[in-house]
Image (tube, rainbow, N blue to C red; front, side, top):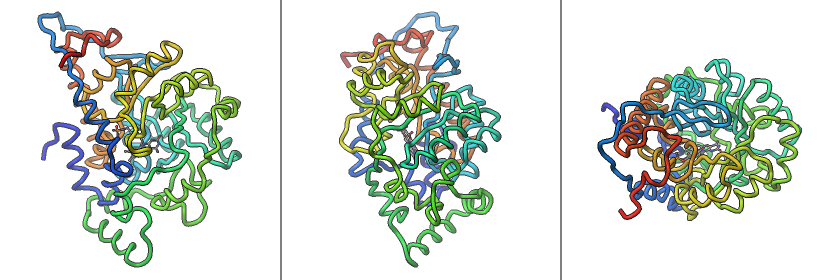
Length: 383
Ligand SMILES: Cc1cc2nc3c(=O)[nH]c(=O)nc-3n(C[C@H](O)[C@H](O)[C@H](O)COP(=O)(O)O)c2cc1C
């Protein structure tokens, strides 16, 4: 199949990846209501078609935190990308760099920050989860700083992992003993291209950035959810931003805000940006979609910090909708994880080219020549 859209990359990833990894990427928490809402609410927004305007010159670039992006899209932090393709974080970071957009490395990445920086020739944005072990956190932040990462993305919506039923059913979490091992082995051998690329040639399969904090057998990536539950710090509050600030003097983006009151608190705590996000519908199921939360948050913070969003972005048309509702840029999670699983760096690059061309068509047909001017007038509020 020749892939034309993000849903095609999803289908290719479904065929190529072992079931446990495809389900891990594709799924959400509990009944997946929020995951569906992210996509459905985005789809329900009507763009406003305009004609007979001079669209011969388009400006698709935006500035975020002083950095110019070739388009208003970034690769959201996605855990364990190195299990979807050989050294997957490096491959995705290379594709992002070539497209002129940021790659945000997950704290749960298989490749550590040093490997990604060296492999892509550019330091990524770095996503932080706060572990209980503050000594380790201090060392980790020093490592991130030493690599020259330009932005710290502090994810605040996962003090505890939401239950993902699909991961239980697939055997990704909670399966043990001989039947669990056989199930996983069968999943691998029935996907030979993945076995060769990732299992045979993509080692080590540990969590690069936090490997030192993961003890014993829990260094194996598939044990990580139980490790998360034990080691993430649930006592974190806005006060801990001061602690982070003592070590990190660069820009901080708070990821996982869905409520305008929390957005105001992020401003007070001194963040430079925030990502309106429900973790792709993977945390508290039943909460509203990111796109529906965006306008009030953008209004609540005004120009006090930069507002981005993620969740349900599946095309360049969705990117324009997010811009129209107040985002300065948006991030994609599953879109790049599917593409990486489907075919590595080259496929991530093709997926990004697809988003770009979709965005340009949407701009031309809504009469938006410059993204800096994108606003509600691009939407049809009566449709
Ligand atoms: C497989 C997968 C793993 C993820 N891992 C992380 C992570 O380690 N840290 C984080 O902050 N967000 C993580 N996220 C959430 C994404 O950063 C992002 O918020 C979400 O994917 C956006 O929704 P979308 O998939 O609809 O684009 C993950 C998402 C997926 C799909």
